[in-house]
Image (cartoon, rainbow, N blue to C red; front, top):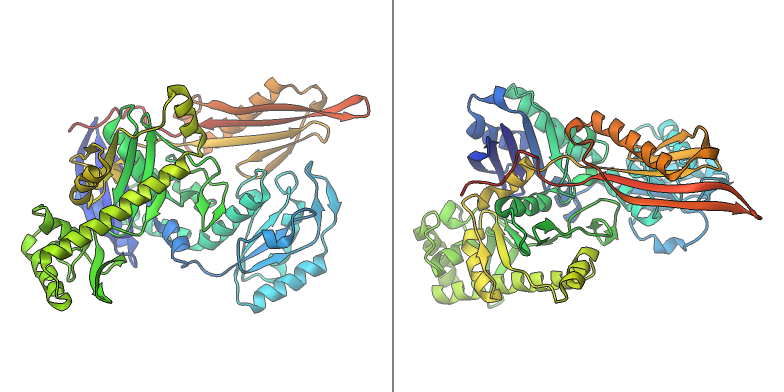
Length: 559
């Protein structure tokens, strides 16, 4: 028995998947100030007394996404050691950015030593600003993290109250700006993610559940909860990833589909090309900064079924936020769902309550209820269709999208819309008609996020960089730098075998033994190092991955 739980900003959904079927589903209101209770409510409805049969539990959540998107993260200092190159003003990641001297070159050699007094003075400024979270990133620290470690040690010595994250321990890849941004957002969200993880553990302990717990990442793969504590930034867009995987899980075919997850507060849009999620080739874009977080190409619109409908400045408007559930479901104010409920006679909840809430708005606005419903529908459908069309312009720049058009010798056209989420039943059919596209809704569409999380398999990417002249190998994840034995005889096949060695090591640590042999090499590069007329060494760059997908036993759901 596998359980998937999606902790959204409005609802917490759950599914039980067992023996090829969804045995049970649950949907409860998320208590943002008490996540433990939200999870317990869902668990209690799902499992009753069958806890001993749980083999695996997977959680997806919008927690990190919401912290960053709403500006709710605690103030965080970003200390950069950029070396020589771009002007400092181009590193526009944080308003609390500090620059230090010291330089490492692209081969990991120290060019300029770090000035410890400069670091200490910087820490005094950070401390006087009341900032307790610190992210440290040095250029080419993925080749040699000596300077980052010096800064971290000085932080612990002179500012022990602070919490420090260094980039080489978060992601050990090239592209300094992306690595710096990834480290910054990791430092910003680490404490909240730890609190969230503790609430999950407390909820499971309270019910005596001892099954392994995974978290869905932004790339649609899972990672053990304990490992996620090191890289909370990987869970940004976990919620949209769950809806994307949910859409694929419900359909299990090779059609081109736009997945639209219409939740209570936001609508998430993603793309399936021949049944496979489209990835963001440049990594997740967070607050205008590209990161090293592997993610689907997703976009969130601040519009959901619970979005408030109100009257202001002579106009009926739809707010980019919610003030409770739809009136037909027990809320106090009219929402998007209420307008669609009346307009299309959907009989969601109690339609009389939808009528009552919109009638009160009609009295205050002087507009007929039918007119209000028409205007709300027009605004919602217009916003969503525009967002989808704009996303197509962004998707056109993704390699997988371009490859499809080259292979098929025609412009990409989606075959359908896939509706996910609580409000999809109300909105997707109308949007489908507007966009002249067929739509797909399933019995389990309202809880498809939880399904997508439940049946997603673990993923792991290992990046290996070898410099035989310096006799070193550096590995991501983990920021491991190891001395290379017999470097002078190293060949490409040796490099690949070493990458697989680390893949096996990390995989076993993450409980991925069943997937270790399901690997693919995505990069195999070899360069000679020449001095004068002689070759003095080689550089190898290897990337091997256990790709996202579904667990082997999942073959689709029964309608």
